[in-house]
Length: 180
Ligand code: HQG
Image 1 (spheres, rainbow, N blue to C red):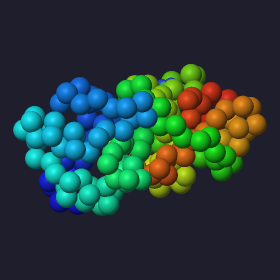
Image 2: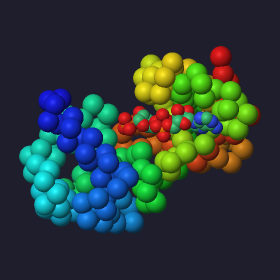
Image 3: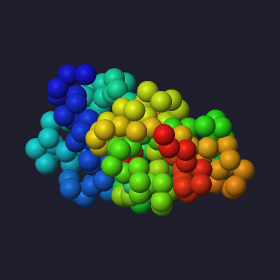
C-alpha cells in the first residue's frame, strides 16, 4: 500500500473504530457509516478522501480492516472497536485451539486475571502462531499464548469470526490459557 493509503487507513481506523465524533460523524447501531457522509465530513475536516481511495483501501488493506455493505453505500471496520456498537456477528465454533499474541511484560498479569478486552469490545485471537506473533510484537517482546477455545465453547463461552478472519470473544479466563 502507498503511504497515502496507509495514512488514510489509520485515519479510518480512528474514525470508524474509536472517535467518529471527531469529524461529526455518527455510526449506526451496527457500526456502519454512510459512505457519502463519511467523505463529506472527512473533507470538511481537511482530510483528502473520495470513493476511489475508499475502494482501494477496502480492496488492498493488508488486514482487510474495512468492509462495504452489500449495496456499497455504507462502510465499517470489521473489528477492533472501542465504541459501543454491535457487529451483529453470528456466534461460530472456533477450532479447538486459538492463539493470542501479547508482550512478555503482560504475561504474569494475564496468567492471574485471564485475558480481558481492555478498551476494545472483544479479546482478539488468531488462527495461527505467525499472526499472533505479529500482534504481540506491536506491544513489545512477543509471547504467544495458547487458548483452549474448544474447552471454552464446552463451558458456554461464545466466539465470533470477524469479516477479516479475527476470532473474537468477550474474555478468556486464565483456566483456558496455556503459556510457555
Ligand atoms: C493485553 C490489531 C495484562 C493483551 C491486531 C494486549 C489485533 C492484558 C493488550 C487487534 C490482560 C491489549 C487487537 C491482562 C489482555 N493483563 N495485559 N489481564 N488482558 N491484555 O491492542 O489483541 O492492526 O487492545 O494481551 O492485529 O493486541 O488494529 O489488543 O496485548 O487483531 O487492525 O492487553 O489489533 O489489529 O491490546 O490487538 P489491544 P490486541 P489492527
